[in-house]
Image 1 (cartoon, one colour):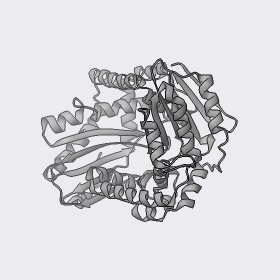
Image 2 (spheres, helix red, strand yellow):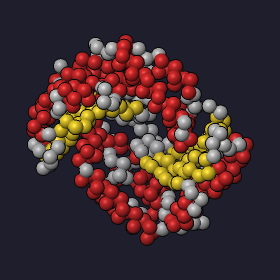
Image 3 (cartoon, rainbow, N blue to C red):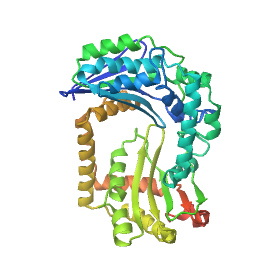
Image 4 (cartoon, rainbow, N blue to C red):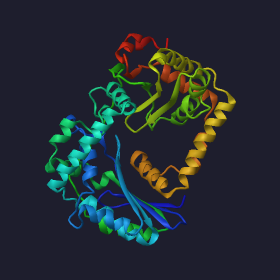
Length: 418
């Protein structure tokens, strides 16, 4: 990696990743997402991200999109639990335009009243679409139980009630409180001189002050059940336990465990439940390894008649994995982890995001050799140990949506792993 970074006097971190390519990927990552919201603010980080594209002092909404698309570029944004990002990709010769547009939407968004009302309707429709999608809603219900009455457990979209209340002063206050330069990272990945990039960013972003208010997020896991009866052909279910945070030294072993358990068509859950028993079409394991929380679990969509068998078979695989990881499974998991990382490093957009998150989470760039070494150091014993640690002390959460879903409360979650 040919990477340089600089921290401005106002606290803004700038990273330049030098690559010999003809495009430039640039973004601004803010270390604040829906986890930083109060209950009354639920959904405001996401709405603010939408509104940043709806007009600035210098450009209206159409001009923001048009100026980028006129040169063949792309611009987008996203909100997660812990991060909000604004990013674009342009040809090398249009890098200066990209920087100007990004700084404009961060510094000079005007939040026009008519655009607020229009976007409010768009987001409320998005909330309705999520509610109507059981494979999305089952995860939302899972999170709301696992992190009960906490910002991490609430939907990133917010609710119809909260989104209906947000006004211009609310958006401006959340921006001022969270979009402080000391909470932001600007990254470029492409064939750009570091000196030129650092100077350009300093000229555009050094004047940002804002009344940044650091807000700590401390998650607390809760066991429980969510059952939502719906007349569906397929029952959707998510089962999970508390996982690891990204500061944990066992996180690489946990990723390997997740792959062996349910990552891909050769994984245990896929082979046992779909291929051998034909109990479902879709099943996979997941692990969320974040700065403030972690989860380990699996998702499946199955016939209502197969739910009992699927849960029992899946949990048997969870129990067995503590004592039976094979050399081949270890090798396959390592290969998938290394390939995924290396392939990601070939994309300047992925590299920019990786570096931004490294700086937000760790305050440093974790270099490729270090990542590869951590992957190589995974052993059967380290996977077994992390499985034992998480499963033996687990407090399970089960979320089910489908016909008779509420009946599965009778399973008795506390004894599922015994």
